[in-house]
Image (cartoon, rainbow, N blue to C red; front, side, top):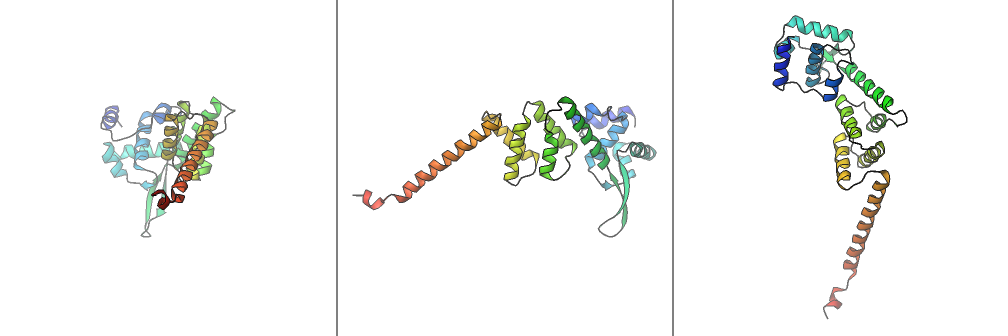
Length: 222
């Protein structure tokens, strides 16, 4: 893949690349061309139909070059091609990047442990509550919270709130953290105080409603 073609692809906005991955592709021991090809597959989604001709057309590269990247990335355990049976019972080739997700997850975990070994692993906690492995994009969102000085304690409280409401996605947690930030809620104690105040306000409103319901309106007309 020629460097000029790579630049054209990025300028056209055909490939979205998470900033974290862009900063760390060398750490993952990927050549730039391999990384761009991997990001192309990443944007297409996991477990997609393996269609070298389509890949070649989209990227403007030779079919032979496509197969070279598939081979080199396969050797580095970033992707693999599996033969599976589709809904019609026919066998087809599927390209999977599960191994890539695993490597990114491990890289994130190592960085968190290196930055502060005394911290609980908020990534593992969220994965446990969600019942699934976080995607690289989800890891980046959580890391952005931490980089914004949102404590793991507060993220854990937002996670509890989301779980209590039966919601298992980071957008919901992000909205909770945003609303708490506007209210100046920064610690677990702040969360508890806010809940107590909300419950007290709700209780007072219910008392007022009961007083209105119990009022003898006929006597009041005299």
